[in-house]
Image 1 (cartoon, rainbow, N blue to C red):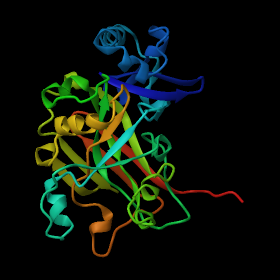
Image 2: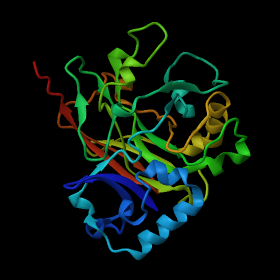
Image 3: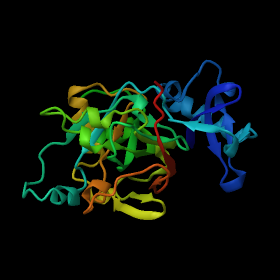
Image 4: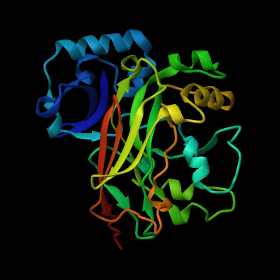
Length: 294
């Protein structure tokens, strides 16, 4: 099942995306599951509520053509967005510092406002010309847990989504020990277009991730090359933080980000960035120069 949050003329709602291509549409599940006001609330209800949502989506006629709605981040208000740095094995070599493979994941946080939805603009801020892309697979948590053992991790995954974990490169090292500034400019990244529920993935061990800029493939790898696979990330993060429904884990980006080219190939206004995750779909956004009012 594909779960999405969307806006139409009547406001913001959530539902299931059904059908393919020109026939794709959205079933408004907020109308059909009274009292369940968001995707996050649906996930918090666990498998019984997900089963009701699947049945409602299967039995209903679409309420809106997919082309007539604006897709928003699937979970607009996650409690936590964890981001994992340097997680594909080839990326450690990309740094050319002769370092050993890491013992533990590198972790930082993002704010929800830093991620736009599918079809919304990526904002190039006036403070920088170094907006970069980072295609990633996003884990969406569906079940609360703390100190989750790796064999139990899958039961805590609601589904997967696409993430462009965009970065303002020259703001990454303003401080001595942090990357927070460069990772949290408003709408510098994106997430979506929807969540595909975990039951549609037999396993998470070999999922392809591809990033394109203006149709050119820049990143292409699979989760078979993750140094810390999904279950290891969930186990590690849940040691120090309770994972709750709607929390998001951006699982790392492959080699090929713009900063790694010589010379670097940063994004400019008008560029189209696509992040494709096999079994999920394509997240697409156009870069726009941010308008700053006096």
